[in-house]
Image (cartoon, rainbow, N blue to C red):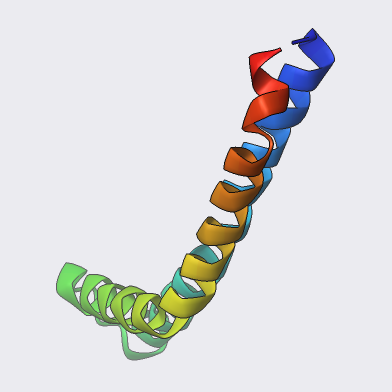
Length: 89
């Protein structure tokens, strides 16, 4: 196994992790910005007010995006195990 091949495998793993995490992080970022703007407008500085909506959005988006995430993970795992013979050389 050449170093370039190892770098390619690690790059694929990092890209798979990115595409799994990116939708959840973007939703959390958007909800965080909206709750912070609402806190600024209402002058309400409560830690629970910013944390609870963000956690609820993460949980709801995780449930909605679970089929997408499972298909991405399955595709990656099938690709890795399909090329297992090439890795052994």
